[in-house]
Image (tube, rainbow, N blue to C red; front, side, top):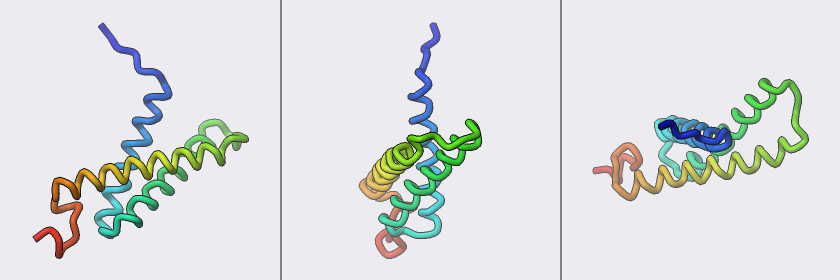
Length: 100
């Protein structure tokens, strides 16, 4: 028995994975939550729109709307990752002063 996953669900999963990996990369650079969350959202949205542009060959008329909602979704995923990491006090998510 095979479960079919709708195509739009796969897009949400891919955006979440990209947002998490960018968040972890930004956490290596800085531990400031606002920079990590907003940076991950913006970088994920830019990558998503760049992929859409290169795969279709033209700019869709709804590109600005897509950019906004992908950015908001990626920010929410990044914020949830930071919240869980700091809630459980994982050392990677805490600053050097807070982790000890």
